[in-house]
Amino acid sequence: MTQSQNGGPAVAGRQREAVLEVRGLDVDYGHGPDAVRAVSGADLVLHRGEVLGLAGESGSGKSTLAYALTRLLRAPGVITGGEVLFHSRPQGVDAGPAETVDLLAADAATLRRIRWSELAVVFQSAMHALNPVARIDAQLTDVLKAHRRSMTATQRRERAVELLRMVGISPDRLRSYPHELSGGMRQRVMIAMTLALEPQVVIMDEPTTALDVVTQREILEELMQLRERLGFAVVFITHDLSLLLELADSIAVMYAGRIVERASAAELFRAPRHPYSLGLKGSFPSLHGERVRMEGIPGSPPSLRSMPSGCAFHPRCAFATDRCAEEQPLLVTPAMDLPGGQGRTAGGPPSDRSSACWLQNGQEPPPAALALPFPPATATSATSDASATSPAATAGAGSPSAPSASPADIAPVSLPAPAPAPAPAPAPAPVNATSGATTATPPLGSSS
Ligand SMILES: Nc1ncnc2c1ncn2[C@@H]1O[C@H](COP(=O)(O)OP(=O)(O)O)[C@@H](O)[C@H]1O
Ligand code: SF4
Ligand SMILES: [Mg+2]
Image 1: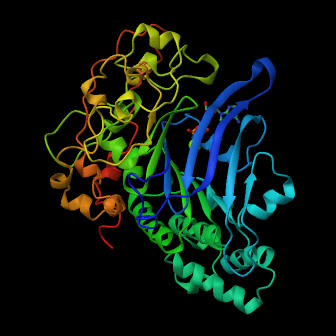
Image 2 (image 1 turned 120 degrees about the vertical axis):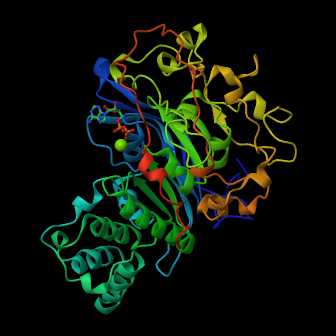
Image 3 (image 1 turned 30 degrees about the vertical axis):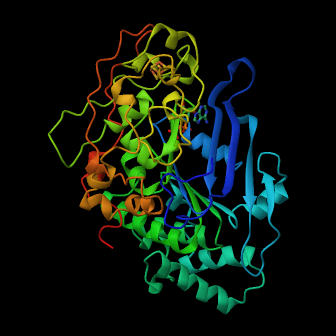
């Protein structure tokens, strides 16, 4: 993994450097024979200054992964394997030396030192974490008092004002109690607290899901601007793949506790290599082109207690074969994307993508929908006005052959009906994995 396909503005034109590496992470709920595996062999790399998106339907293990890698997982959750390497490079006056810490092996004192000041987390219900009986200024300055002991009271107060301004809240709100603020403002305050100590990595688990789409959009726009200015890296977790298209440099797709595809945002949306990613992509509407009936993905994710054999997606997969029900595919670079493969348009950047699907092992040509070349042959002429103003488009600026991707560009995909399931089919509740409302708004950044 050396070259960015869709490197963000903060990293365009320079070598990518890993800040967080998750290797072979396994997480169970429960012990002994009652244990169920919620995350299995997760491998991820977050590069400095970039946004790594983690997508997947509800229950796929995204939050479990986030809690585990920050060591905030509570019983009955147990981390049973793997490592999480944090390559810290502190900045500023009080900065310590550069170091690499395995967060899974770190002692409590090391975790206390790193959490919040170097690696911060915003969870879905973060706005409810504000103390209801303390004013906003007290809550902001308390963080500084605890972690920046050299700051005077005046400096703390000035920093609190600066932080509120940074997230778009007027400083006259400093004396407010949380109940005097709207949900969006409370979430902004939480983001201000998260950024108070200038962390190198911010993990955000559905940070705006509870908010209306307009507020969500405003907050995310501000967040991305802050990311460009301050240079922190983000793991952004959401069930809304269309949102990641606009935010993320690279995306990992999770299904039933496993990462089934990793790719740059542009690759995933232009040329997915896994049937589940293809189904997610087909679950939200395009603003352009013909009106097509949304297909979604038939069925629902499996229960951890009765995981299908072989590839866990096979009962829902339109392309499943007998082998899929028997053997688990590994996450590897698709044969067509290896050097000399057919998946790369001549002159395109090298791929660091991977997919866990038997269709991609090179024995047979994959179905056309999973074998689109990347970059597309018409990439340079196909960039729409809408995508040209989106962060994803700007992100591609560092590599001219990597096209931007925007929901506006993405035609919904009609999936064939799933093959007769070799295992008992789950309840046939059609899943529309993403919100159409989100994609109907202009691309992030286009209004700024
Ligand atoms: N405290 C818990 N005890 C047992 N199982 C849990 C617990 N929390 C989550 N799970 C299970 O772990 C799986 C992954 O959950 P989660 O990480 O919350 O998924 P996501 O964030 O992708 O929606 C789900 O099947 C869920 O039921
Ligand atoms: S391995 Fe088989 S069931 Fe799994 S995603 Fe690929 S084709 Fe579908
Ligand atoms: Mg979750």
